[in-house]
Length: 627
Image (tube, rainbow, N blue to C red; front, side, top):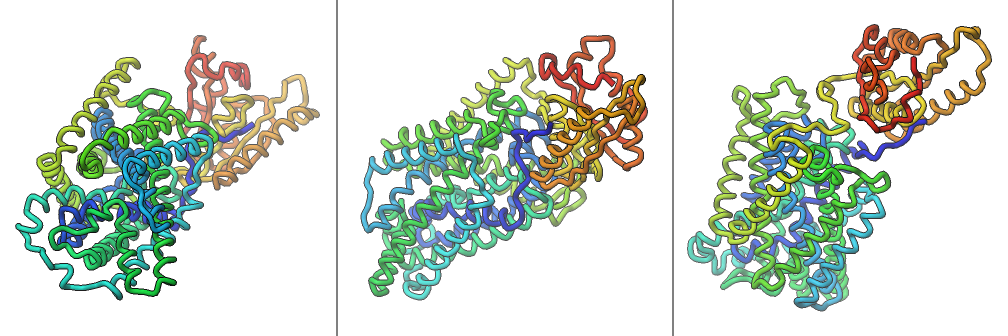
């Protein structure tokens, strides 16, 4: 009997990916605009444009990486494969910080948008209390319910796009003033050069969704084609709208001697813009507009917190699978497809960030500075990994490649790595949060990594392969996979493995049930129980394939030898891969594999994938199909 395994499934198509990408990246303007404006003043549109172009350059490397490496983990996975597990962990650990800060800021700003929708304000510390409640609520729901990103992404993205277009259209029509953009602005004085340098790393907070989208590689139907297109389309639209929103915001609140957008409205900047638009239209239009922007902003921030918790879980799953975190983080719960430990950790740490920074004079600036420490390091590492893989694995299949290559060197990746590392150095020099708290967080992670590796007897630089990662198959292409049906848990694992491989490569699966007829019986003897079991197991296999979009053909044959029947069917069907399982009991005897597996290995006309289970695992299958 086949079953579904608790693994990530490839269910996302191009429209869903674009929706998720746009929703993730565009959501950050709801909390980033006021923070950036506080320091960049009248140069905010230019700062957002320049960091947006840098973000686009970085996304070229991410597109190549996710298209070539179809695993979850984002930059941490790129770096692990390009360099080693240690540097992969360092990258993943600093990315955890970014997910946590997005969760914290989204939850902190959400009550301010809700209050704005009801024409009031919420003050400290009640916004922190409400934010902690939001995080706890999202975590509890995520622990018992699986989020369906592809179902809600389009709705949330449309709401987000409608909100931003409405603000831009009405703002440009009713508030836009070239004079307001330049009043009180003098580069080097207002803002000072130090303020501009301070604002550039902060502006990275406005582009937060790249890692979340990269983490969806293992859930995308055609990552090589759909991920790059969706990513570039979403980023291009976001950059244009960000600049336009910044222009409208500064027109509403001119930056002379500072701007109210970065003081009174720093925790709900888009609501602040709408209050100015309200003064230009009849109240029958202005009041519903403020309600819509406030509630839609709250919805988008709630979605950002939810997807960031899920993104934290995906990254933890990848690190846990490769012995970079405790083993429990790499084990998915079948119902929710997430490790409960990941959700609890994300919720507790993000709540601790909110509560721990509440006493600071500028907690939002501190968190934004800390965000720049992690994201800039990760961006730099991801681009270096893409460059390294061009040399260390030149034959790796790359459905998308970074353009403008000289020899094997992708020039945009080189330029992007230099720029992101330079901005990281600026952040370390100008931001106390990045300079002090960033290294402290990294130090905690290194201690945890050393403890995990030592407890498992693994070297710090050693490459650990996950349980379902098959070396030698990463670049192989199969069109037809043959999997002999076998009773028990090992049989279930084999059909699920075959379906997963077929799903990744667009192949079909043939499930073969061999009824072994004893020598004392004629080959066409009546074996009703065997035939019923064969029919039921093939039906389950077909259902599993249908659930994952894979065509599974079922066939029952009679034979004296199971091994001979498998080899003959592989020859007749033209299968280019046979998937078999090996029970642990054979490794306690003089032979490593069963007679059936031995025969298939010697006679098979195609490649054979054997998954050997450890001692003590699925022992009850040891007597099935002695072959």
